[in-house]
Length: 167
Image (cartoon, rainbow, N blue to C red; front, top):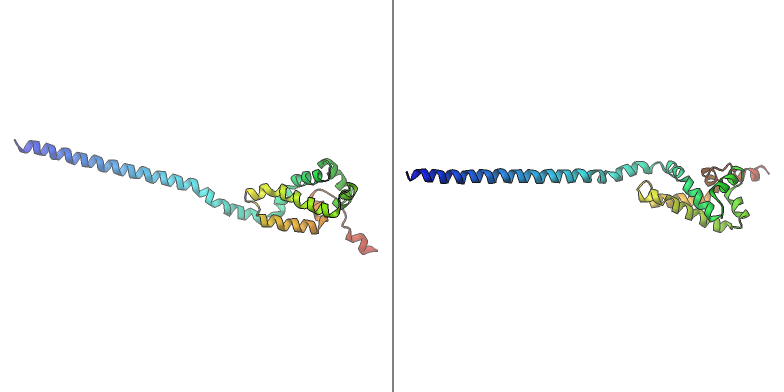
């Protein structure tokens, strides 16, 4: 008879060990699942730079996408509405002509162009579509080639080099 209580006690201990073991395994599985979900949630964030690098190669498309914002910034710096700036550009005037008519020096126009591009393209830099280095490089190009900026903004300006070359 003394063996029966011993078997019961041994059975209860084994049962407790099994329950604790199964519970521990279930707990560890839950932790692994949570880690896997957290890792899966982080994975797209890690992949964003790869996507941004793909977008970076299309700086022309990106700049065209932001052309309305660039035009708005430039128009404000010239004390014009974007519609007035567009009309002047489409009539064949260059940004230089428009700035002169608004009593803005060429030096100030260069500063206005740089500021307008920096401000308008900041969202593209913030979201990783462009790098600040690309924007800076584009600003220098735009300052060196105002006719390209005229065309980007919807102008029909004829390059000033052509009339000079024909004389």
